Length: 302
Ligand code: NDP
Image 1 (cartoon, rainbow, N blue to C red):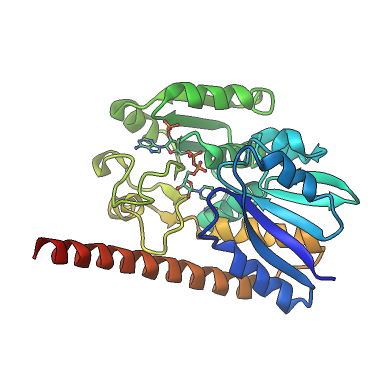
Image 2 (image 1 turned 90 degrees about the vertical axis):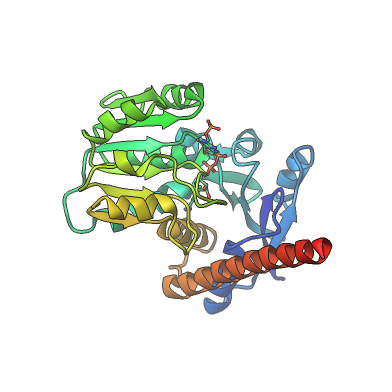
């Protein structure tokens, strides 16, 4: 019987990882089907309980359930526990295990950014949401010594810093208020700058003004649009040493999931190819929607 791997989220209409994972299952001869499961908050406990059935191999968990799902699994890995978020569920018989593969995904992106040089020790992070939690835990476990977090709502960044309290006791992890002058002075003291806000995802906007980005930094944006975000374009223009978008992170959170469910090495090149194709298709349909809206407006005004 074919096993089911479901993506649990709300909404789930645009899954980028579905085509990537299905291609990987097919390539490795694994009899599994990837499905989208639109699950609202009240439906979540029932949907997670159903995963205990023998027809399920596992699940992906996405917005808005990554944090809510944590009390519903039987055990969590260190990464899921530390970040307080689960994006992957595997099974041990009927027992459910929660993982967070955004963490190894981020580490792969960071390694790609840093290249062959020595791993830096200081970073500035913009944002304090779910993605930022994976980033902070990744930096703590990579041995960073000074990590400063800025967020529009300071209390959220403070909550995150508090959450990591014990695992960051050997280093300086601080939340600071979102003022341009404070960000500028921290950027002068850092090596790595990471955008973990969603600014730039839907509009050509950057979280910070171009003028305050100093030259020589290593800069990452978690946003994985194939077109470069304004943040990365402006960072490059400021003379950064290297830049990285969120594509490597997205790919590697998926390859880690594949390995967890199947125990087999993931076909990375094929998965990258399918992911890029899914992203290109999403961009094209977004462009079509913009063109349709413009045409409708023209007709209406005629
Ligand atoms: P969340 O909704 O959990 O967090 C959003 C973050 O963006 C918060 O810090 C929020 O600040 C900030 N933000 C949003 N709008 C504004 C604004 N107008 N002004 C200032 N700050 C703003 O989202 P995630 O953490 O899950 O995702 C953040 C980004 O990272 C997204 O673009 C997502 O696509 C990307 N991501 C990429 C991954 C990858 O694999 N490459 C993995 C995970 C995320 P506040 O708290 O003040 O509201």
